[in-house]
Length: 78
Image 1: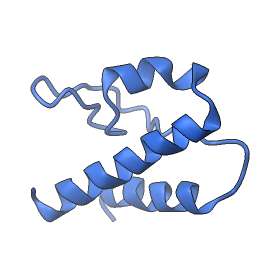
Image 2 (image 1 turned 180 degrees about the vertical axis):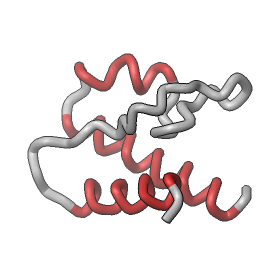
Image 3 (image 1 turned 30 degrees about the horizontal axis):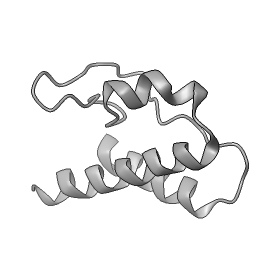
Image 4 (image 1 turned 120 degrees about the vertical axis):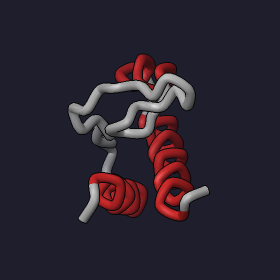
C-alpha cells in the first residue's frame, strides 16, 4: 500500500470516528512541494500545518476532509 493510500485510509478512519480527539495528519515527511504548496507527507498547506495546534476539532476535521479530497485527486491522476 502506498503512502498516499495509507493517508487516504487514515482520513476515512478519522472522519468516520466521533472521537473528541482528532489526530494530526503528520507522518514526519515534512517537505513542502515548491509549486503546489502542500506537504509531500500529509498534503496540508503551510497555513493548515501552522494553525493545527490551535484549531478546534471541527476545523481539524475539515482539514482531514481536504486531505481526503487531495488524496483522491492524486490517486486518480487529476
